[in-house]
Image 1 (tube, rainbow, N blue to C red):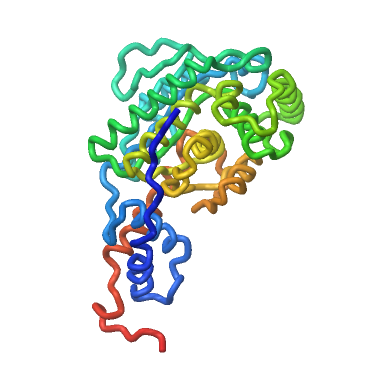
Image 2 (image 1 turned 90 degrees about the vertical axis):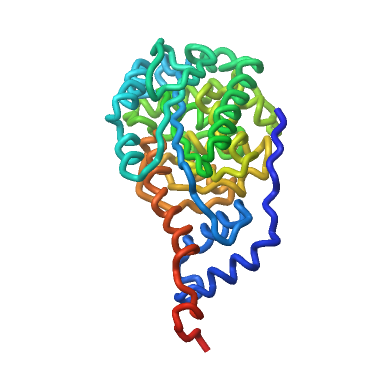
Length: 346
């Protein structure tokens, strides 16, 4: 898969930094917001960036391994939660509504027939992946189709004027998938990548450890395995489609709001395909899933929020969105020392 993502031009950095430093505040006093404003201005190559038509996409898919007991919830919860999204009743609906994000749900591979529904994009590759405990989760053709469909969705939104794209997901069993992807692409010990997901008790967590170790043994991947192979072995269609959407969006200069652990797994894959994508990624929150710490370390990322979240759905991205808006607002609207007639530090 080839994606052409421009490396961020540094020519504008000095002018952006000077504009930030000349605001009526001590230098660095707005902390991470200053770094965020600089990043956004650099992505857009503008001293007055904008955040038009922000969207949040929730990708949904089922996992063949879910029925083996890697999750505390039955697989039917995936399609039931999609129905909840479509009815407007989930946490992400609430946060998106209150923060002005246009929400769309993508059926990347749910084991359920929804029919034609308002607010739902049917991009189903198959009704769930295969069971990676005994065989690869998806074929190379399915993987590539999911990546391509995600890229197409993002490019279409960019063509409609979207400058910011947030990512969320739903899929029972997808923390297990993300744990495997994280282990393979960061070389973090598997045990440090596995958490309780939807709320496994101690016995369930022990079972999850055993099953995921079985999956690693079955696949027998080399240490230097490529990301596309890992994605086909252990990924979900929602993870693959997210990775493609991230790549397609970054190609068009769109900012990426990165949620937590599952979305982070998709970004790990995308960053192996096109490392330049990291310049476009805004890391929104630190998940309480242990594997997310490994992802953030590997990607050299410092997230905006640390609220102990582990819900998924893109909730961390939606909650961080006001901070992204604030970063652009201070850059565009805050007075400079000269314009306000305020004396600078001697």
